[in-house]
Image (cartoon, rainbow, N blue to C red; front, side, top):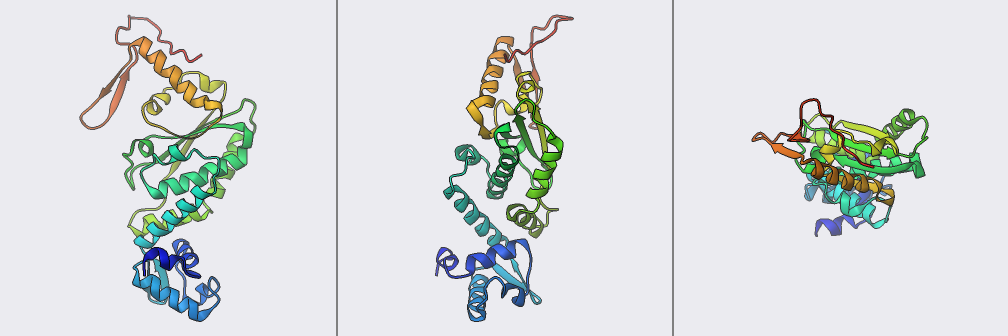
Length: 264
């Protein structure tokens, strides 16, 4: 029996999803699969495939089990045709990141609705250099002018995110591998008007970014204007041997000259 055929059987997928968020005893899992005979059979099959293991009187998902559950969650989310930019999301290298960032984007969209103009993942997650236990997840978003109570609403989004299956299962996935848990997510935002003014943070997004949502291609338009402005200035990106980099905005800058990056 293949893993996929096993997960198509009654209760198998539900058991695996449940064990990705919490270890459980047999009697607890009986609430997930009420038929005791079916539950016994499914647990035996999941253990045989290496997706679940038993520690004392508790059943827990293995790292392979997490991988399979997250992969299924990703396939299910893709089938629902939600308004997240799937080709962009696919740029994220890690499955856990794609699954959880999709859920976070959906929560931002549910909270801010039409006020949310653009939502972008940048930094190491976008470049593919993300290091578990070291890197943060960097998020940038643009809101319509006049959006109110942004900080309170953002906090509400992240509180909801930390209670989702995607976050909790990914958090346990990292801990199962000896890491401290789900990475820190750092978020920054600007109003639509202010986002049209050059921000140094844009330089980190210029070459590699993952644009999960972008109404009217607003943010991509800002990036195109930035590329033109930097080209006109003769801007040079300097890369160092250790992987760090810097920018010389105007190589022929005269003493006392003010550099302006025009994005209008």
